Picture 1: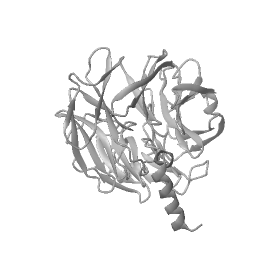
Picture 2: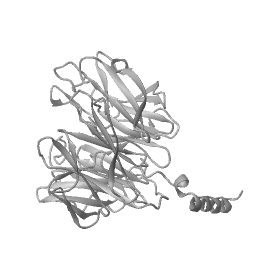
Picture 3: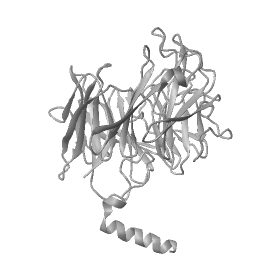
Amino acid sequence: MNKQYKNFLFAAICAVALSSCSKDSDSPNGEASLDTRSTKYIITATTGATGIADYLLTTDNLTTGSITTVGNGLEQDGSYRYYVTSQNKFFSLLYGQGNPGAVTSYALNAEGKLIKTSNFQAETVQVFAPVDKDVVTIKVPRSGASISYMYRIDAAQSLIVGEAQQDTKLLTTKGERAHFTWATQVGDKVFMPYMSIKGDGVDNFGTQFPDSTWVAVYSYPALKLEKIIRDGRTSYLGAYFTNGLFQDEKGDAYGFSGAIATSNGAAVSTKPSAVIRINKGAIEFDQNYFFNLQTKSGGYKLSSSAYIGNGKVLVQMYGNIGLVSGAPKLAVVDVYAQTFTWVTGQPAVINSTTVNRYNVTNDDATAIFIGINTPDGNWVYSINGTTGVATKGLEVKGGSITVVSKLKY
């Protein structure tokens, strides 16, 4: 069968049964979608009101207009919530301060209205990520008992369908323990980067090993540990509640390290903020690839990152050179060409952003939408992955933006 005919056949099949041929709208790699259903964007905003974590707002457009929390939106109770989208469902997880918390899922009905589809209890977790057709959540102890609990939630059924355990002290050396920063699907496995931390009840997140990178590789869906891979050219990938590992369209995985490890409150990393790579099909770091972000940026350290597509990544840098402090500054990096471009059009002063975890890309993965909160107001910005130009869009009134997400209907 020649290539032209195969392409024609694929198009014909998709015309008859679009949903079965569509790229899932929750693609972690930001690939262009064939799904022609309508899109509704979900904005969560926090007002600081006691007992209300956020308001869920919906809009058809992120590039213009305004929305408000005043008399609008679905209240999310609690002091803090975290969110994840999988299988065209939006999950709202209550942070229970160590106790189990409510997990509520939402979807869009035929009219595009956000409706509750399930509500159940689950453990408070520190990692929550889409994997295959599930959501993987991980409860990670920072002191005391060293057992980490992993759960597999079937996103379609909103049910816990599997679990596993990991003694985090077995992943490190000399009395420290692992603290997973995130979980990323890479091929048919789950890669879990982690920090080595003391977990001693005094300096919990401090470490004796600030200049090492670790990733635990697990099978899926069994979540069985297969291998630990390690590197010494930078520090741990991501950070607490912060993803630092992304798989691109080629199947390679790029790890982002801020090199911001501490001990007894003092910065002790001697390595630079950098990007390292795991090649497709490999379970080891590519020793021929090293992208020194700190040098390319003029000395700034990495805070968080978000994959746009085609090797382009939005990075948020700490505003003070060489320090883990200062108002955020945004840039776009190309991990293929190893280029660093400061974003133009970004606000002069940024209070906070949704770069870490809570953002969406456009259909052809050339731009990313993030929430930016400033002293003058709160807006959704579009940032072009090639030019690094930021464009102000939807204004959110009455609350700071905490999430930008999307669903189809």
